[in-house]
Image (cartoon, rainbow, N blue to C red; front, side, top):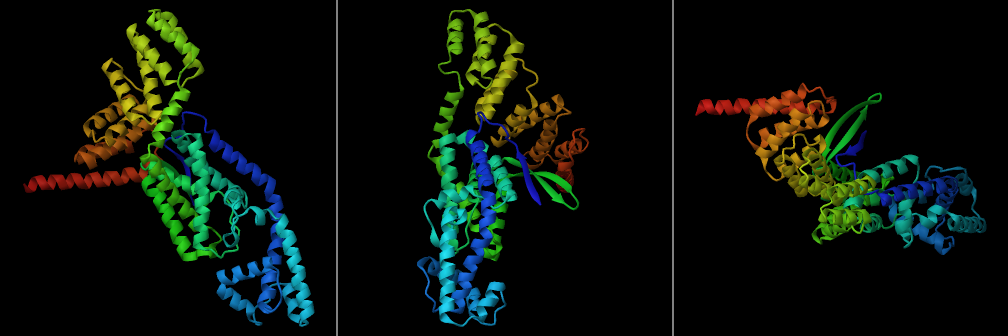
Length: 500
């Protein structure tokens, strides 16, 4: 069994209140409804089954509109099973079925159908599933929303909420709360509608947030295709193996599996696979549209404004003090502000300016490292790179390992491979016992092997990673494969030189 544990970006600029709220709401609704749903499902299910059995054996009986709709939808969705039930030789389903086979009087049979119809109407009117779950054969507008907040069991709930947390809070951070919430709700509606199109006559109720969560997963793929997701493979007797995989191949693999199961098993599996596929497709396309429409940029500007110092009395006072040349008092005011709002980019930028004017380089470097980190959190790698350039040009020595590794990734994405390699080597040297140094060795090896055609250097980095004091059981396979590929490439390069 494969379980996602975390991904590279497990931080946000603000509390993900919508994501947390959705998780809490789903959990509270489950606690409030699960016991009632467990109690009502068996009786309602048996009543439906008895109506279908009686209608199959005696098609001339009169039925209410509600019963007729149930039977017709079952016939359309399960023609083979219906034909089997019409045969008097089919296996006895239960004790009720056995008793009905002994009845021949039309009046008794009609009375039984009437009793079942009245019971079905009574149970359906009070049933949470019948009223709020989504059933393709008789869709109701409210169920497009309510079905997304009902779950069939604790495992169903926990699985959906865990995926909601992993994909949701980062999307909430970059999209903002209103857009994110609307996207989640519309994604759930789209997933249910696609499920209905795939099996329009189904009388099986559909519940769960899976479709809406699948929409977030599709959006995550579009928005963060290169983000590494840490997976845990559980096998044997509680044995585990961890590895990392980029979203651009892990998530498409998941949706292809859903397509496979949906095509192979369809409705027989009891899982709405096409709702997952539909939600994922909607999410991927929706995130693309949001990006092209520029909505994310406008939301980010608004978020930055909300978390910055705008109109903050302390910051206004600090700026006035700077203009008046009262730098000691300005530092005190700015420090008070960042103490209350540690993620205020403008507050730290003001401290940078003051420290630079006072030539307090250690303090300037500390503030610059902080603004670099905040720019990375805000998904602004260009701003972080400029901060880092200022840090180095002013004599800064060691930027913290985590932001430095992110900057190296940005350089690699910009195809500035030589500079990326140089900075990775600096990181490895500065933080030999940190996890980031191990990741830097892997990144440096990849750049040397894939981008700069230096297989011998790549092999040295892979060998250093293999001997790293940092625990790396999850990377042993990747390191071994890298060493093998680098060795082969080095031999091929030497052979080519000999041939020349």
